[in-house]
Length: 300
Length: 300
Image (cartoon, rainbow over all chains, first blue to last red; front, top):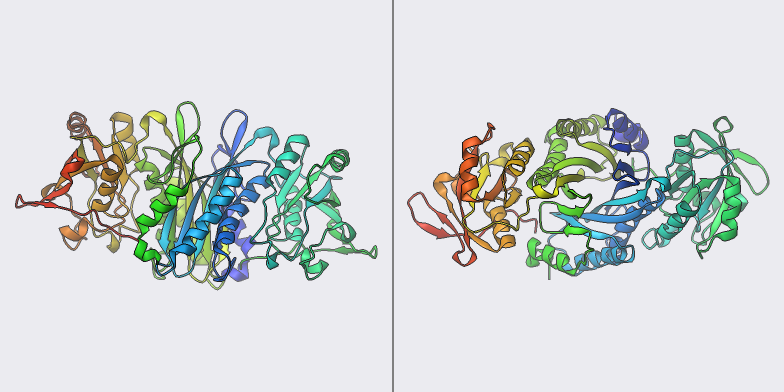
């Protein structure tokens, strides 16, 4: 059997099931970042992301944006746990015949994001490679009381999404601001029951929350904010790399949140969590309800 | 100017100089692992390594050994700091047409090493790629008093190396045991002034110690243990990926060490540290002294 027949998520599940973890691991594979015991009141967070030329970016992509994306996508994962990014190590595959200005620009892009979010770039690895490869691993930390997992969504929770959805392929997937300040505001001022960042797609990533929390959901087409860059609504909710946050909290908390949200970043209440046996449905503008399959981008 | 004209180490120096670090970083780029403030009596260690098909291994290489190497090379870095490996995240690039048994074997190889050295595999990333890529990032910890850097070699220190040198390309580069128990014995029982693992080559890595410590050294051909797999002495000292330890400590401590070394792993006293202006020399079996350039493998 080939990997693509097994499918990416089935493969990850296979791997994950075979791994035994020590009691120092609060959460291993299966959230935006791993959660590790640290101090009396804090956890360590640990995540990694790999970007490949020809897959996540192209020869013609701005080197600075590519570098920035490599770090920003990791910061987005730490944000989705409610945490703060701290230390990064960077592995880069370069061809020796590359103009070193491209390499310089790429590192400048990483440094710019690192400076903005106070991340220390503390090490890495460089290897010779015909295609450009960037892998960043990022350590973060989060107060134990502020940790936000995918797995704690509760029935009747309101579902929110930040920003606009879809069409990120036009530019946003390379040029986005991870929602760190928004996430920190949320976890410090509200009881956030579940949170995830959109890397696979709105449907797929909300689907991850539902699966991990063993819940269903109803979401409303008319409430979902679609980017002007998206082809249409149906593709927008299936497109990856929006790097927006999806989160859920109680209705009462949700009402308060809508009153005090202090950011320019758009905030949209798109639906609610329900019992698992009700499944996952989309209410069309027409009022018709449609059962949906939480699909998004998979690598194989 | 192309990257290969600049050279790998010059490029890394450029990057490193441009990076500003916070006070939470004890040591950034330029040792086997980054050293980060953690608790009252411990530091965190953080390292990463990328392996590429066609570069570090080939289509025909045993998947289990490739996976094992990816984690072992990181453990070797943590060992060279005097620390203990704790948590790893794994990024893998696979082609979807790959037989999933190969992928399974690769993860089994990683798990086998993780189990042996009590490392928790806590997360990762999978991406579609025509060539296999494995990047592992590893968090470790070390008691502050046991930290071993490259930069603290002292004049008159004895220089030691573990195991045999050279010819690792035949098999050892894919099938080695990181010298973790040896390194822990050393830092717990002796004042280790400097330590590094051999990834570039004996000459190159001892050269890193000399450069970072601003010292010179004399090493003796007759004392350097050459593997039966090496072509000859001169290639052995320039071959990479031995994954043995080079370390230095005072002569007095060295005498005691030679008396109580409890392991089967060979231990060889190969020379001594001297003042920087004396340079780096190799004393041939004939007794002739030769100034040497600390060369080894570079990626571009």
